[in-house]
Image (cartoon, rainbow, N blue to C red; front, side, top):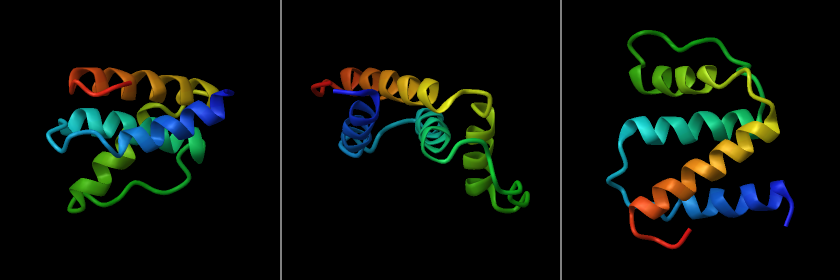
Length: 90
């Protein structure tokens, strides 16, 4: 399989992660997913009162320098790690 197919497979597997994931891990995979699928941040930062969307924007901005391929590889690696920690097949 190619990188894009692997990425799509792990994007689906990420949906099976147990709900007890830390916000930090969820934000990491969110940022990598957005970088891999959209590219660099293309919106303005949400206001200070919108903490959830602001955290998601910050997570995406944190990986802005990565290429789409790098972001896909890092996403796959992180999801594999979280699946293994949860005792699920990676």
